[in-house]
Image 1 (cartoon, rainbow, N blue to C red):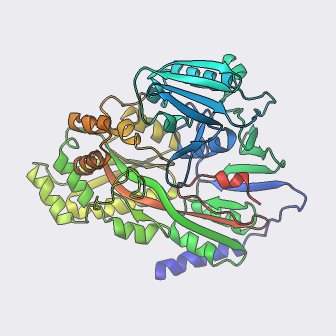
Image 2 (cartoon, helix red, strand yellow; image 1 turned 90 degrees about the vertical axis):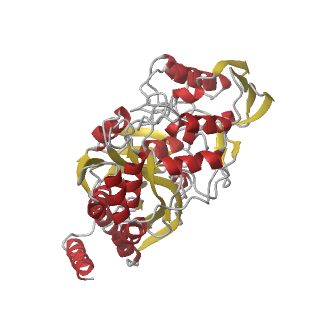
Length: 477
């Protein structure tokens, strides 16, 4: 209680010591402070959460998903003509932000360009596209080299204009799509404009969570979503001019493990790490409402979920016994990499304290986001912490754990190889596959983060989505 009281005294004094900043009534801008700037606004390359969320606003996709995680038409309806032929027909008129009509030729060019990019992280899942044939401006067919039950679910890459693809346009920094938001500029902040009404939205990176809260309280920004510790969320809930909405989350947080490391490749060492983490305590102390303990990437309500997976209990003495039985000299020194985000560093320090009684000496290395994420992709880590965002299809298990899906072919960043799991994944035996993943622990599962959004006037009725996307900005009042 004493520590929390001191926190609020400091925060209140900071607010009182700053003069309010009022927006001019005639400025058509909604400002959103974000913890991390996007890395790449080209949908063929983007993998970080911020870029993915913004790309959903900038581009349209062939398919979307309903509340039950089933594919539904986006830009197009489809027919399954055979296990290896899919026909798509545009179901609406769409126009790119530079004025060109979106046609089947643009869809063909987008996916063919993706297949031509050897370093694109999404390329591998489309390698079985044999050819794409345009029938007319609204209709095209995909021909596959092998049957794929989940092919339609994969078609969520934002569609790019063929004309600009041909000129090697830099979509990463100057995106051109057909989504509800249009790119304006990206300098110190990213500015988008809503196509339907000209409403401007400005996204500014503010790494420090306390500073983000202060900016919202003082009226310097209008919206925050996610990436705050619970005491700051509670503080915002106490402010009469701030609205905070929460929702159950589906984004999966985990510890990544380097399976090529001579110590971590031992299963009992990974089990020891899993038993050295007190997940319920972390959820109580530093997570927002509606956070749930996780057993697998996809939540239990997903059609490929597995509600039978029990979280690993906090048993530090048993964890120490597992390490000793494996011949590990204690304390076991491990390096944990994370970003410089304050909340992520806080997680790391709690993990460090919790693991100590298990005989694990955890060294924390916090790096700027770009360096950290590049190290993760290159396999330059022992342990790291990340969150899978917006995952809808069970093929994530193949891409994250399949033996042939190390980056850049996929997302098997720990370079895990398991022939038994590969067989289960190719059979699409999701209950057995998720059970084996849970037993083998190529990832250490943590939780599904609860979602929240905080906003002030003039924003009205903004509700966070379970996967944390920002789609609501497209219709925000």
